[in-house]
Length: 358
Image (cartoon, rainbow, N blue to C red):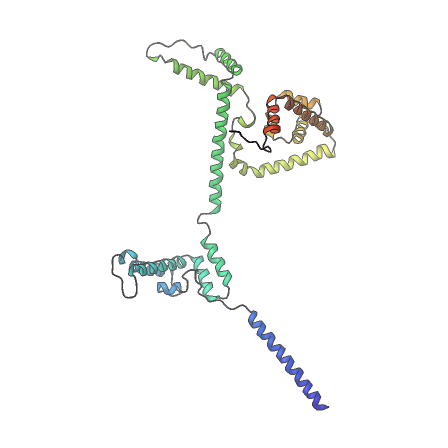
């Protein structure tokens, strides 16, 4: 009986030791293997950059630069151009490869941050993926400060934006100068101011008809610029509307909007004050989903109609919106171009196949 118990205890002990051994083997197999310090494709590859330049890890920048200049002169491809190939291979190709390796070693060790990453790789070879990250993050990092790039881009966009607005404004002035209604009014104003009733010039100061016509055209355009208020996309550009000033003034606009919103809540939601004309037009513009410049380009009689119909009240605006949609449908139904388009869609639209007889 005792013998049987002893055999059973030995078997249990042997089983426990076996399971422990298997666990240790499995852990060893799954544990990450330490990577080699020198990785192909990173820095100097399988060679140590310090050994390539022939310097120690304690060498300073001056010593590294001096070693690089000496080796660069020795292995520069131009020195080996035209020389016969040695017994070990092509002299020019070998010198070129050596020169590239020397340049890579110098680029690695001359920069303090890159050198720190390289020394860390030599001291911690097991952090395989970290070395790849640091190497490519520095290699692919932009050479110019991102803030400078953003500033130059914003300035370029702002300059283009300003000149584009000026071009649109000049186009609007040139068009208005050809409209008889505005041209006649501008001519009358110019005559009243004595700008077009000048005495005829004689002698050497006499100008050609073309020059006089160009001067009169400029006078008419100047009067139109001063007398006509152009709104919307063709209005006169202002320097603080460009992107650069909008970004610089964004904190001010944000604080101004917060103060205005708090004032709105306090006056109209808490105290129950009645809306003024400006507030009513603001609510109407919000209902119409129009920008401030779009709403400002509307005629004054349209805004008066909005106020007369009390469109700042949601129910009144919904009725007005429905009326506008019905009126638009009637106009489209009566428009000959819209009728032709519907006829084309019905007879020869994109969903119809036709054959052409020869």
